[in-house]
Length: 545
Image: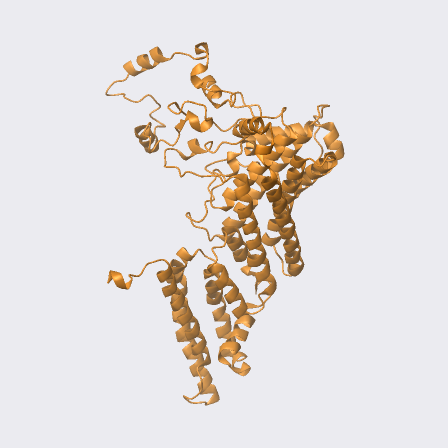
């Protein structure tokens, strides 16, 4: 453990330089233990707990392709010997872990700004499809034990409790001390708390929408324990207080302070966007959506400000830029580790997650926010007819929209017994039928017509939901669900038309309105099915015949 702590130390240059007296020679112990093995008892473990998984892991141990827990020391620090192989850093057991202590007392505003920018790259990776273990929890401050320690420190600051008693929903903590929490410490705690809450909200939205696939988005936590002593309103209050503190101290127009202001404002606004769009209700829906659009505009402004600041940074004009860069790398290497989750996945092959540079992540976050604006908010505000909703979803389907926006659409596609929470679905279907077939409203108001419109509601909802799925998954959904329903609907529509002819004594010249409508959608679905096959390259071209 002492050797590993040295290897992970960012002040090190070569692990071979460490004093040998720190190491304990266990060669004799290993030889003695190995000599005790026999053919009848060849296992150095408890046979009662030794499983098939353990045996496979033992066979694959030291296999470079399968042993995901081995890392080159050069991955930890460029100056380390690349030939030395070490296990990944363990999940910290607290803020002052005995082996891998995290920066705390020495944190500065510059460190807080750099940590906040790095947190944004993890957030972009989460929205890009990485699991929370591969993204959010590569920030070591985000782990439960560390956040718990930080909260205890925050709870113990008497002046902080006095200024911000609303932070605690229950009684204020009793163990107060005169030790002051510094502004950088407060800012790091608030930003980490923000990204943990945002990650949980996003996971909740995507899980409830239930349209993700393993290739689209992974919601696995690999057994990581979330920080439980947190909620949305409490996190927002904490972030607002941190924002107030940095604004009060930013009297000299400090660049890092501006970065922190924009990051914290972004987190506050994003949390409020997700909270409002994930739980819309019919009564104030329009007001909530317009408020969400305003918050999205604020988030976009925050990210654009960060983009300008990062573009203006020119290391070549700064004499101490090289030293500052080394110090920044050292701090971030202690606070972030892309390999910390590896022991949690066993010996299964692990995909390599590449985090973009800070300035490269911001345009992607901007794109995702703009998608939430035009994909979710515009659909909810402007989707007044079934035809318009279908055209808007068609555009969304071909635009490779992020999983967050698609999940928000599914959550709000039908709630409070209305489409988009605003329109009775059978009424929209009836208006669409009139528009496409010019059916007399008398037929829609008959018992047969009303029953058929109600029967159309579920298949029509499935057809709309189809367009929100990943395009690679739409064909399977059509084969499993939609085609069967619409095949039955054609037969039922024929019966409805026949009953109308019989009641009205109209004869065979009476137009089969309901059959035409069912046939129209069946042909559209078949056309969409074939077009998807061509798009995905499932059909042979003329040169393959």
